[in-house]
Length: 434
Length: 166
Image 1 (cartoon, one colour):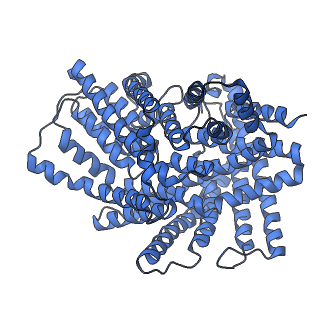
Image 2 (cartoon, each protein chain N blue to C red; image 1 turned 45 degrees about the vertical axis):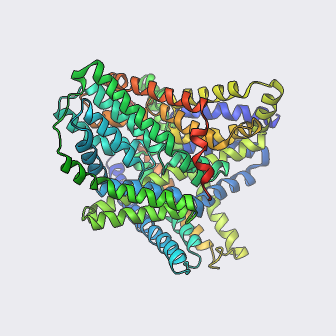
Image 3 (tube, rainbow over the protein chains, first blue to last red; image 1 turned 60 degrees about the vertical axis):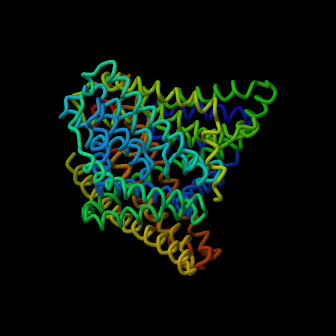
């Protein structure tokens, strides 16, 4: 059997294991090791399995993932999400749909300390949904905005997906982080506009909350202060080359600990819980990477990525059409699969094609994050929707997905803007030294 | 079935202890990276071999946390299609995951032990700190072996599965 045919069979077998609901990291490892056994023999294949798992877990560069995940979980236990929401609430809560806008702003703020969309949605959702319910917000708007704004977690740095994309493609994680800032702000603005439009069309969806005095607003800004300082330190440090992403993760986690201690909001139990949640989530992410490494070696041996490059070269398809097809593939994949494994699994296969088409890898990274963001809120999988459903079991899932629809349109609008003006994503990274 | 519950209780307890060790490891990683950066940038005195130690701590912390991840079901899976099936088919499929995973982790444990033996024979050292790496590889193998035991528990539990939606 030719290696190429074996590669195609391997991909189909992997999809079968996915459909059979075998956890994604183990599916990739199983197919990878079986495939390698056929190509290079059982002894080498099994040695590869142990080597890949041990070297992934022992990889100092991957500590950046652990550090940023722990930073996010500690941020929640330090009460930062609560403070961010209260601040945003004081600033815009008096407007029609103001609480939903405050939710969007708080998610953007929390995203600056957390690299996960589900963690962002859950952390802010725990506070925001109760408040919106208190002020008689329509659950369709309330849940839709929390689910959608949670996606900012993987666009605004630090972002787990950017880290993984950077490690898989050898692109600078610092440049990728910085590339996500402007699109992240654009998405925040677009989401706020979506809320405003919804409340203009249907004012009963988001009644205005109580107004705050100017002094109260100024005082409330202090709630953003620690997030702003930490974000500036991390991104500034990366921009000017003070430290690399790995050190940034450690500094960020230590910074969150310091904030929690200074503000006296991090209890002993909170610290233990934050470390535990961060550790278990990191183990999940590193297992996915280890599984994908085993599978990736098998796919490389089968020459499937090279075949894809040759095929597209011979077909001489317009690069824009190719990109649209790839993004459409990610969109469909994102509807059924979690964002991280989708990226880990597909990027090593697709990336040589992207390079051969002369597409900017930083821009492509931002586009991938944007598309998988759409995936995490799109049915039938839509992980964020299920997370929020867990917080408000009385709201039907159909209402949650109905609420997401206008925000989804907003995200597609941003995709369109980034396709037309790629410099939005590539301008800021051109100043990064690391 | 009483023995399964007892077995489950012990496994959960041991996984909890393992995770606690991992939590200490993560905390050490934060402290080490922080002092390494501060030492390097402010005092031009980085901690010698900090990166290597961070890598080793991560190896142990992550491998010791895998059992907790298995027990809490954090590993992502595509449940959409299986949930469309009847409860009988779901029951069979539910049993498939722990069986395949037990085999995978048994292989992983065995090969990691062999990797440890190889490193011991060749006296492989950790980067800058020049400390033998093999004891840590053996420790990781022990943690993988425990994950294998957790998967065996999941095999037993899947026998009791009523085929409910995932």
